[in-house]
Image (cartoon, rainbow, N blue to C red; front, side, top):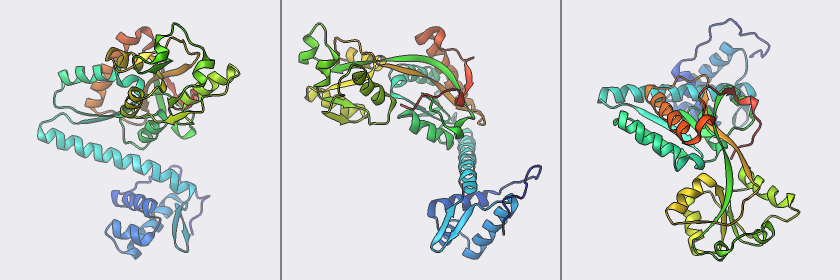
Length: 334
């Protein structure tokens, strides 16, 4: 029987790759027989390996149930770190394979929509000019989803907003810029012909908005409530820009989005700004990295280019010296 009070401080505890694979398989299947088959071992061997792992750490990683197993809080914590370690091993394997093939490796980053139209594309172009063989993948999503992937080791770094999470206190943040929201519609929308608008008029319109729970949606709804108005009720929820753009062009719906992003669509003729300054200020965004992760040369190169482009676009606000732990902030994710 494993004793949770058994101290492991000062003990050299090392997991083998096969042991880590078993923990991940157990977490995925919640079944010892299926996990054993997935890791190509017999069930008795898998059961013994799990007992050995738990004895090594002195805590139970899984509760044994009549129809399977379930991770304990100890197991959940260890599995999260094992998943990050396995992801780092895979990245190392890919990097070695890339070097053998004569290319420059792989970089995976995440960004919120705000930085995806100007900052990130310019940095990608500059990085490609320096390292043509570097393969760069960019995921555009909300900050909470990107932070989750970063914590699991699936991304090298982010351009995103912070959220307060106890288990993400090991992340560092470099402030880049704050952000203003604006209202947009299709070109030639009747409201675009007006010289000014009021929130009361906008409250009765149809809107395409980010889902409830996002910081932009919260700020948008509170903007109306502070003006003693009910938030718009005629709403379509989506953050997929191809869908948003198509809906705007085919309807009289409105959309709220970051001003920097709106300028891109206005210049391309796909959208028009409405004549109203929304009292809806967003929180700042910046570069987020994991303190326990050593960036690859390719990721470091892209990060350097991002910092240089950000300094040109945002000025002094984009300072690479502004490094603070994630727990110092309390803004929710967007």
